[in-house]
Length: 262
Image (tube, rainbow, N blue to C red; front, side, top):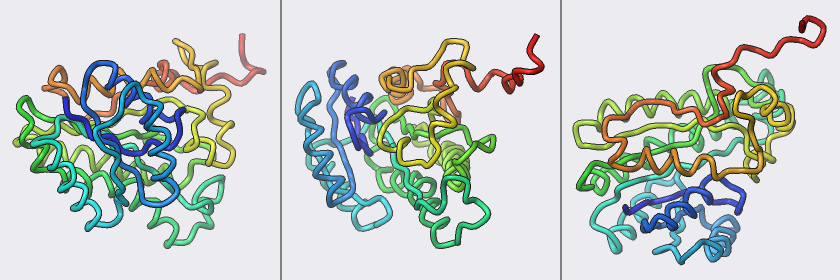
C-alpha cells in the first residue's frame, strides 16, 4: 500500500508506531509535518524507521496552499494513495487543563481548526489520489473518545467531537468514490502530544486499572495493527466508525469509589 502518514512528533508517538509497522509489512510511506522545528525533528526521527520513507514533506494543514503543494509532491512519487493517517492535533495552553469556562474564541478556533476541521481539509485535498486506489482507500484519524467530558481535556475534547462527526460526513460523501473514513480512539499514550496537556496524568495513570485488558501508556504499537487494518482492503466494508483501541476501558462503567466497594 501507498500510505501518507502525518504527525510524527517523537519516536513514542502513535504515528511513528504506525509508520514503523507499515514499513515492516512492506508498505511504502510518505511522511508530512509542519514546516519549521517540527519538520526538522520529523526528518531526524524518520531515519530511525526500519527503512527510509519515500519522502518527508513539509505541510501546515491549516494552509490550503500547503495542502495543494503536498498533493502535487505526492503525485511525483505515486499515482494513487491507499491510506491516509491524520495524526494532527493542537490546542493552545489556555484551551486545556481545566480552563474550559475561560478560554477565548481565538484559541478555541485554533484548536478546532487544527484538531477537527483539518481532517476534512486534508481528505478533500487528497481526494483524487485516494479515489484512484485500486481496492479503495482508507482514511484514519486519531481521536480521544469525544462522547464524554474528560478531566483537563476541555476544548480539545470539543475539537475531537468535530473530528469524529466530520469523519462520519466524509464517510457519507466520499463512500461512493471508494474512500472510507474512520477514527481510532486510543487509550492515553505518554508521548509529546499527551505530555503537553496539563494534568494529563489524571487520565493516564489509572487507565490500566479500569481496563479489562490493562493498558501500557508507553506502548503506542498496539494502535498500529488496527490503523493499518482500517487503511487496508480488509476493511472494505468499514466506514464512518470510531474503533476503540483502549484495553476495553470505553466499555466499562465508572469505577466505584473506594468507600462503596464490596
